[in-house]
Image 1 (tube, rainbow over the protein chains, first blue to last red):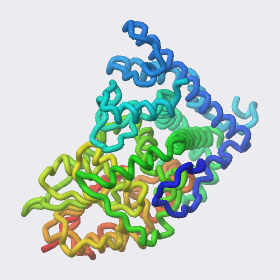
Image 2 (cartoon, helix red, strand yellow):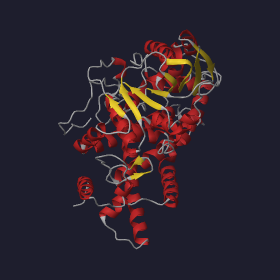
Image 3 (cartoon, chains in turn green, orange):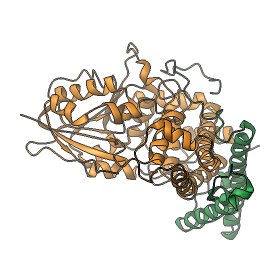
Image 4 (tube, rainbow over the protein chains, first blue to last red):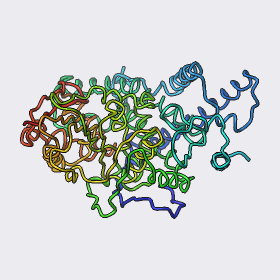
Length: 115
Length: 388
């Protein structure tokens, strides 16, 4: 948790750390687990850039001034929300789709046993 | 340079000057409203467009994991179970399921992706709210001085150990992070795949809540209210009733109250234990709770049910909604339920589903019980009506 930079009361109490999922290896090698986490984090960064581009394009199309404030406060139209969500889902499917493939036989089996 | 902090400062300055921008025009009723990007309906927009976009991505990612990746995992689980000589829907000991799936890369991929997405969402939100901690704490402080509704915190309350875990992997849990409510709100909206931004889920539960056969609904309690979404939904359905909401976690209650003030909903929030609410006997016509019980120990659950028997009036309704026991077991379901318990930090989920005879405890507490939990469903409702 980040350091709290405020002297105001927080009304918090001690907590018991219970989240070890971020450090646990589910893939037999913690480096591979970390790579998956990194690939997902990179996806968030990429989508942030793509969505910012979409906002700029919308402002330009509407002939509105492209200022940082206009970008930050832009509210997508319902139609844009729908289209952008579809674009996002398509990007996720195209980029991460391989993770959704089931190889059928156990991958740990030697190649000749898998046929 | 236009950055996150400058937006906060310009928003505060605009508020002080009485000016209005597109964002602020959608701000609501708070005396100090740190919503630099305004609100969409009931939901305040996240403090930067980049954070909003990342949250949007992780919401889409979670939907993808829970559909496509989970489908591959389920198919894989069936294959592995069959290869080991188990039927697809066979009830097996947890140890057997763990041996089948613990080291499988397809099963592990889904688990890793789910946890990494969830953790990254929490990380981003935690960083964002802490980055402007003083402003967000000031906003909650200001809300505590105004209505509608009220907030009663109890600094002397001894917070039980079982409530202090990092439930759902949330950093600091509900009690240990000043922004627990903020984080919970947006992170669970990711979990709801974006379909609860306007409290749609809670409004639906409020609409479906049974009412006592006789007498008015004058007083309602949302037990284990968290950030108050169900309480405000109940107030919307019963505008003339006095709506109370109780939780053990002060940070969650502070956010809940602030949000209720922001949307103009009169709810009375109170910090107390669900096992010892402090309300008078027979005080409530309706007590409702949403996903409280799987987050308490079996011992606490039994005490809470007894307490609800005490504070619900004769003929009154107690209506908890929560996770069901696994009634259609399979090696995959047994393993997935354990994964949620172990790695999503749901320390008490298995106690609730395996050790508490809910209907028996309700009868012991003086309720007639209509168990509405359907076999095979992971989530269900129980209608308990207090006997005269």
